[in-house]
Amino acid sequence: MQGAGYADVVLVHDPRVAADLGGLTPLVLAGHAHRASSRRLSDGTLMLIEGGTGGAGLRMRETGEATPLTCSVLYFEASSQSLRAFDRITVEGLGNAAAHIQRHIVPRPLDDHKRGP
Image (tube, rainbow, N blue to C red; front, top):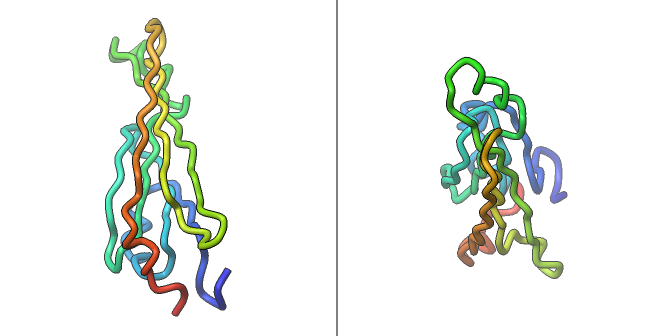
């Protein structure tokens, strides 16, 4: 941690809460959407939105559509403590038997992120 008011990673449930966190942290992890995605906030902050992690699995009984389960494995560089890559792992929803792993390389500009206020 680099001083008061700064965090290396911020976790929020709803991505809308993270809208004002750009520039205060290099990485935001969010959920709620049940659909995995990633995007940059202002000032270069990376937000990773995880997909369903199990809570929506029973919706299949209502909708007839299986919600995939997702998680990410994060890889940080020891010397800079910067996120270098993440693997997004997706397991197809109830009744399916497929899994996918996709590697995402984080571009170097994250290194230049302003660390702290």
